[in-house]
Image (cartoon, rainbow, N blue to C red; front, side, top):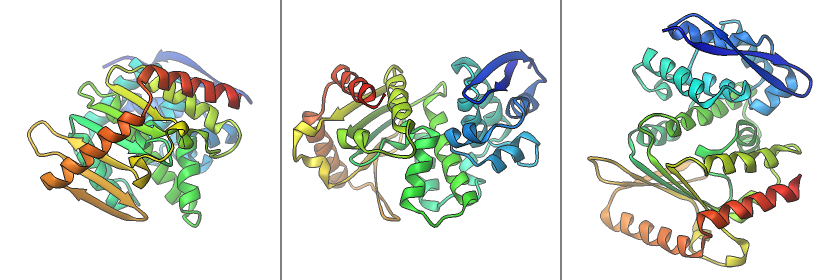
Length: 293
């Protein structure tokens, strides 16, 4: 298949895309990752990947994987249509899930990603951070590094790449319904270098425009509410019973008993009672972003 791919022109302040003809199939996606030449340190920092890892990808010394392509396409500002097409090419080239071959990926993450890939509906509540499926690369990098400051640069690169690759879930043709609820405090907490939170908030606004994504924020004015007990994810499937995912300090649990499911659904309903409606949520995020600019 012949199509278009990205050639980037880098400057000290921007990345300008150019579309041109490239080879078919998997080589087409590889061409995208290499076409822009060396990504400057500033761009690499915003991407959440080290310059050395980007160099390995661009020169072909690192195997082309969907998590790398997804992260780089975001930096290269590839259009949504082209991005989806290229990611689909990479997916088709590897039938097995990318998470089964991602080096250094914790088993806890592998299990969650596996279930996310099969889910038809994902409901995620977060009290302290932006939901993983809606994080930018630079925000994810700052969060992971803050939580685990002793991990190596290579481990950090792999974890950020994996988190970015998870987000391809929301761009596939059969994307699940994603319902995200987050505490306002997470949106106001300074994370990373100046500008990281501002870009993260604008990313959330863009995500909220997708028809299969619903975003709601619990305002600080809500005071004490049920969500203060911690985050959780409810995963629903077409032909299998639903699951609840709970994670805390390296411990991961998947709950499948009907009583557990009923309890977490009740908690989610209580949290939603305290949350702003989607339209009011967008207004609040826009206001916070304006305060940061």
